[in-house]
Image (cartoon, rainbow, N blue to C red; front, top):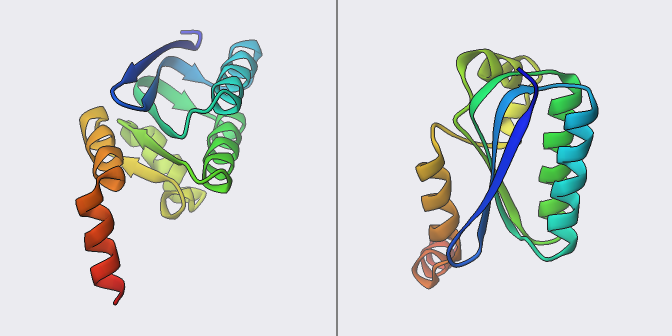
Length: 131
């Protein structure tokens, strides 16, 4: 199945890109990467890439994820990857990107963690732990 994407916002400031099909080299992946880059240029700083309905990710798809992750970190934002199946999880393990990318079992976990990271209580907790 060809890559299909749907974008939606979760208040107040989280953008979700839900992907279905094959996150692999080709025109659709280039279009998806371009769309994500445009969202980042337009100010998106909390991003979830939901792979729940994604069958497979190849090296080109992994490259896109790593590029977007690095771009978000450089701009002070955050990106999380949600719902990767076991095949995609194996790719992350083999390439050791599971220690770099923020991986969550499902979309709700990713959203919850992004919301907590922005809350004043979480920032106070983090400050207290580093003291």
